[in-house]
Length: 245
Image (cartoon, rainbow, N blue to C red; front, side, top):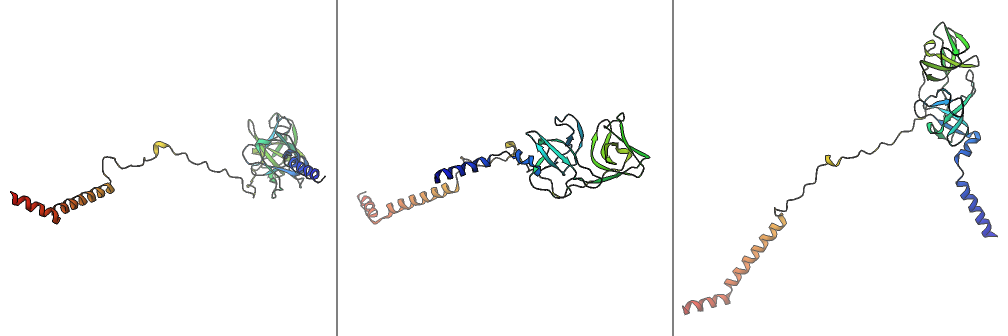
């Protein structure tokens, strides 16, 4: 019985380690960070309709997910900034499993600088008019889109639409306080042709060690010959030979 309990415990532990992260993201506890330029949020799950580009370095909250698409929300229903939802591609963002620092997304208010600013249903001068803001009134900024011309996606009077960038002041958005991740530098590849070949001693020139050994050998040979000639026994033999002559 004890062995069976241990086996079941180990089985649960192993299975728990292989639960995909996507299930945890469906519990409204995940965040996605925009870490590169031109990341779009889409109105439809098939990503066929672009809404606007999200602000780099900021976060959107994940509501649900699958292997390729994240269903996310932008803004936290603060004053003048109603929350909206849309879809982002998983490959366009970095997943974050802890609550990020605030602000999660910039809350910028733009001032109408022309006589009026017309909010349209889509980023086109031919699109239907949603509402019109007059000079000095403020609209809430969500993002930007560039088609034939540049547009801001904004909210005014709880209504959303696209406004020509020339009708309002420009947003002044700083990077999120959390630094963006940095890529590790790629080690430089050295061209073999650029390297200086190692110099090796020429085999034609004797090394100092061989020269020393040769000198020692010659000296020892000379001493040996000298001793052989001048030892007493050798001298005696040489005298007898001279007398016989």
